[in-house]
Image 1 (tube, rainbow, N blue to C red):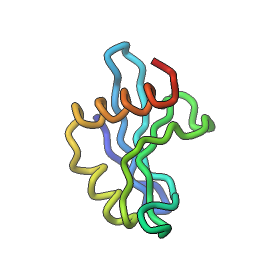
Image 2: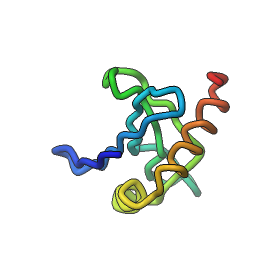
Image 3: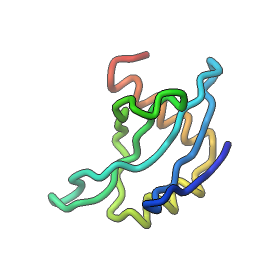
Amino acid sequence: MTTESNADTRTVRRIVDPHGVAWEAFGVDDIVAHGKLGVRLAFRPADDPTAPPLPSRVTFNSREAADFALRTLGEKELLRRLTLAQAQAGRV
């Protein structure tokens, strides 16, 4: 697992799924509860930074909250959320 923050202060986590595929977990701007701007947890293959984000159902009220969660969530929980996002998208 690696955690990094890029120039626009977004935290990115790298995880490896049970099949050996490396993924990046990060937050994307989105409309969340009560129609407010927030951040949604998303994933993409680590070897394809131009791939469209695979969104999850996890949302945060702010970029700060999303970055904190990405820095502190356990790897098992991130993998669980990745699996749920894949299932939701019909990719599993």
